[in-house]
Image 1: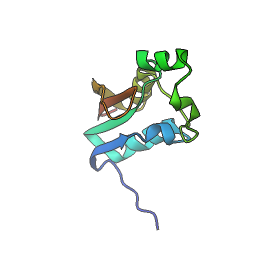
Image 2: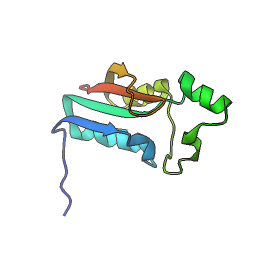
Image 3: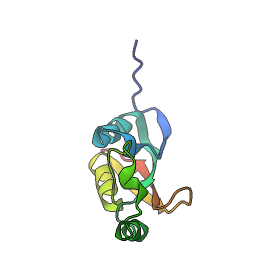
Image 4: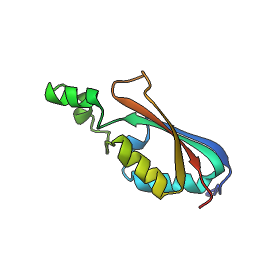
Amino acid sequence: MTTKIDGTLDVLSMMDVLEHMPFPKETIIKASEVIRSGGVFIISLPDLACSSWREMDAAKTNPYWMEMEHHHNFTRQRLITLLQENGFDVVGYAIPYRYKVQMEVYAIRNDT
């Protein structure tokens, strides 16, 4: 039996998850279905466009290219665009210190 959740979550956190999903757009679409209007969506993952990423690439020491479980790498702009296209308003951005080149994006589910 499958239980369907429709717009009932206040907060959904995907810390270091989305880059592991084979179909990240579909994951964001599903998040928009289960988060209530005004609810918060938090995503943390590596930022392909940050200067640290470019430095590791230049030195040929970027470990993210070797992580086979990472299906996708995102720039901040690409992630923000995907969120906006699927019912979210981005309201915050942070650089955490858990891993190198990380970003955290905070979005609110809008009414559209």
